[in-house]
Length: 169
Image (cartoon, rainbow, N blue to C red; front, side, top):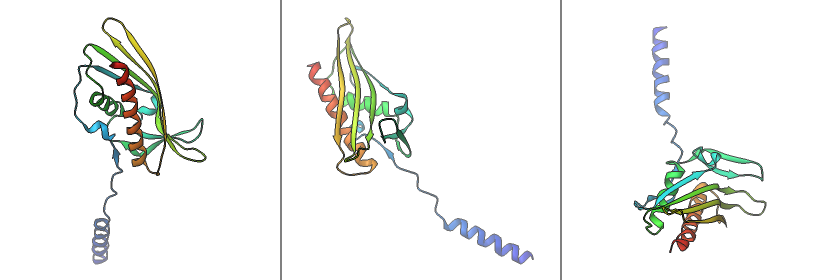
């Protein structure tokens, strides 16, 4: 009886060691947010609440979204978006750029999938002068997958930064 228990325990231990732990799911970074930059421009990024849940968002219909559980941002999205803007925008002393995003996500369509960024921005100087603009960007996804969606959203974010920069000149 003791021999049978010892063999069972040994086999259970070997079986447990033979199974590798599951690999953790990937975390995603916007490629343009990997550049270190510092700007005297104060940048504030605000996201719609559902975008702030850590997972990459896919809009499935006009009223349904899915926040991915296993495909997540490697660091808070607001931090990445702010850092990408700091690296892309010209230096502007004593000004504050506030960006509010209502959409930063994938969109499943009947014929094609796309990446969508919408929102608004305001650039305010210390003297109270303000310039405002809307953010409305969309591009088709050439291939599927979260990595491609993240790269396409990054391209869109760079286009948004370029549009904002033209008003700062």
